[in-house]
Image (cartoon, rainbow, N blue to C red; front, side):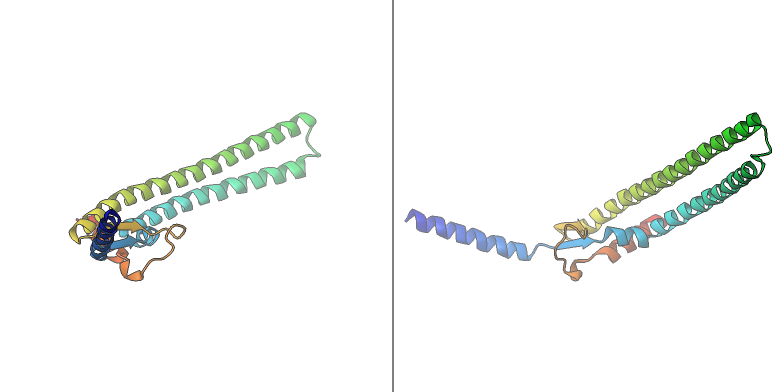
Length: 172
């Protein structure tokens, strides 16, 4: 008799769980698409592109200077005294190190800005997603991650709605 009661309680529990599970609203947001298509994301890309162009122009100028210095060294190397040639070689090596340091610093700065922009946008977007989920009765809204989500019904995609709300919130 105990087994029968236990089996009946378990069956009832499973039936109740599956009935309530059917009412659970679940959605997802394609965060990469949301980042790329949001007004804030587009603005961040433009700012990064402008910084990259500025750095690239500086890098090109410094590369040209280095090339001229190396050409001078190669052309005049035989005509210069040992001391003068050594001084020019040392100057070239110093400028090369400075160029490499500048390039690395520029790269680090751009990467840092990209991470800063992304983090700020994601923090703001998370607030919009939470509010959207509460307002529309979602139990769960997941971030779409190609390596983690094995199957996703496209009807559960709330990215466009979140984008609309996020962009509208940014304009206020």
